[in-house]
Image 1 (cartoon, rainbow, N blue to C red):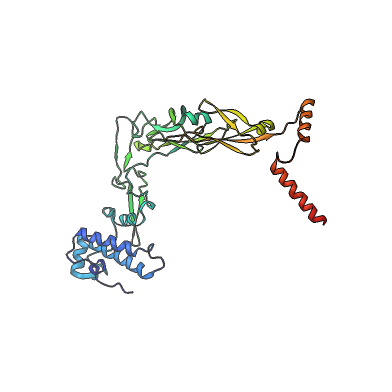
Image 2: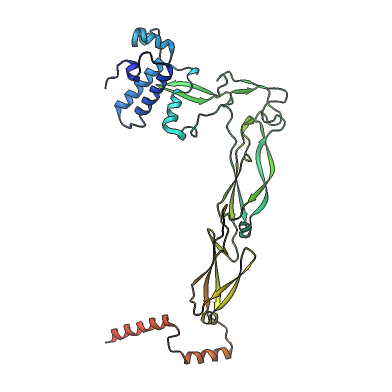
Length: 378
């Protein structure tokens, strides 16, 4: 498609449009025809380039005046308008378009701030007991961090001296260069984005504004935390260089193995072996809970191995909420391995009086076995 048309027509504005109208029209059209929104479409790519060329001309008062008088001829063969290059005053236009189209994909959703970057976040892994997770606990930890230099108060400059504006980027912390129709912005290589240069660095931190230090922190762990729960301590990470904001410290919790209970969410599990007489006659077993109470678990007569019994409200508390989970006890019926002569005698007497109705599952199974054998032998 041919795009050798009037710049005002390309931007769909009147010739007397003000700067605000021009910029609004440019943003709308640039988003509409951006190559990333129209992959593989050569027409959209050509129009996108033409729109950028038109706006680059009309946003500059001198270029616009030359264009209004001579048209595109003003910029050809060394005409009075010059080329379509960028300069240090062009901050914001193409970056604004990228920000509108891609959001947080470019710089976290907002315009990058001039100056040193925020300090790094840190991770600390802490193991706690299940009892601590139930009641909550307060712990002290020690971490090695890059902390703010007290000698220069984080500025990086020797006490009594100050910084001066970077001459390379004029204090912006960024430098720009034209590449095709794009204006590429990079961190200033002289001041590393700070916008200021230290002439006389601090002797303690050597201009970094921070020093390595071990500090002690108090961590409050609320009831109900679980494996992988993350606790954030704001501003307790590494200090940023030259007085920049510090990062955060994240405490990752891990549960130590418990000798009685296993856990799934707010539910506690345990396995309880019982004698076959208790399973047959019924009874109860005491299970100590993490709440310090003794929970009597009622065993119904005739319970089978593998059956799970639930005690409501005897589990873990809900993190940052109300209520507690349950305690689940899985019953394992244990077969005796050491019997006295009298016990064996009593069991033999019991076996002689069995009718098969005492254990319906085994009675039914062996009944099916007999039927299968009879079918095979017929």
